[in-house]
Amino acid sequence: MGRPTSTRRGRAAVIAVTVVCLAYAPLAMTELWPYAKPGAPAIGEWVLGKSVSPEFVAEAVRDRIGPYSRSLAPLVVHSVLGGLLMLLGPVQLLSAVRRRVGLHRTAGFVFAATVYVSMGGAALYLVRTPPEDAFSGAAFWIVLATILVGTLGSVSFGVLAAVRGLPDLHQRWMLLCYGFLMTAPLLRLEWGFLPSLYPGLSILEINRVAIMHLGALVAFGALLASRALDRRTTVPGVTGTWCPTPVLVAAHLAAAAGLAWTARAFLDQGTDGRRLLVAYVVPYALVHGVVAVRAVRARVRGDAWAREEWRIHLTALCLAPAFSAVTVPVLERTMGLDRATALTAGVGIGCGMLAYAAVTVVSLRVLYGRELLRREHASTASGPAVTATAADTGTATATVTDADDEAGAAAVAAPGDAR
View 1 (tube, rainbow, N blue to C red):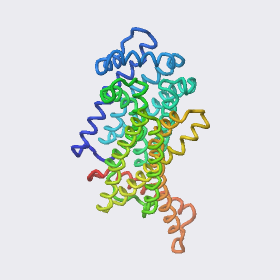
View 2 (view 1 turned 90 degrees about the vertical axis):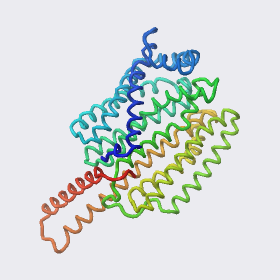
View 3 (view 1 turned 90 degrees about the horizontal axis):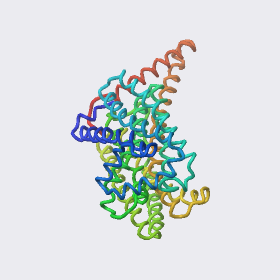
View 4 (view 1 turned 135 degrees about the horizontal axis):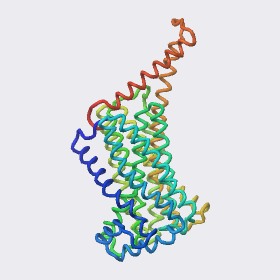
């Protein structure tokens, strides 16, 4: 792991994330107490009432009573452990950055176990609640289910990477996992400030606005953190690119087509559709611009690995609108949704799912490079100039692989400028 605190922006980012996590933890842990015992203290409701209005809070509580009553116990487990995850996240990040290996491993075990149990509570709620009856409706239910699957998948790949001795991939998957978890506090922040931009909107409408960009923002944050912590300019075995210029051009054409279709579909929905379109397009354009500029800067510096990772994520981001456009009719037919609901859900899950796909491609890129090196070493060891036995050759290959693992871990931890 690198040290993002070596730069002013890195320190600011770490402090901001830590403050948000520490502030949200008690809110998450007490959020559902009033549903289990009327009159119980609820810090989040009090804060929201002060920042927006008591009427806004009363509406939120009224709309959640029905859906939550069917699965209150699993949801309480989910929210309490979710608050614990907000505390464990900064511990994980700081222990890794400061190279406190023992603390990082212990906290990591607790973190992973807590994710599985907390997400299990959320899964029970989703299974027991029909999409159309969920809080904020079917579109919100679909986005929640997608975040759930993404969180469980990323923590599972993160644990597997750690067990296999792949610190760079472990780092990426765990950051993505925590990014998905951060959708909860970020949504609460949007509950607080979006009503000032859109006076009179209900919490159900605020949720629909928020899911237009939350997936893109948390995935973007995870990518920035991954690049800031990975100081390598090259990765063993990784040469060339899987995203040459023709691929990027094709991806941008797909992005243009997908965005055009999405814009037309939202504009057909009237005022609500225009509001959702702005909530999607503006953050999307900002993220695209930053990723594209970072890819160009990496190329100018001659930083091959940073350039490759930025280009992979840029390609995935470009494909997100086209993916959403294809997803909308699928959701209409398979779940019986109306066009507006399917459109909101399809757009809401597009960027998050493609970011997950991008991290998967980056992982395969690294693993493919390692496999190429392994085969080269095996081919050299079995050449005519080598007389070692098969057992000796296997030992030599294993030794080389171990050396590559150690070199890769050292490279990830090497000091340098954030990429």
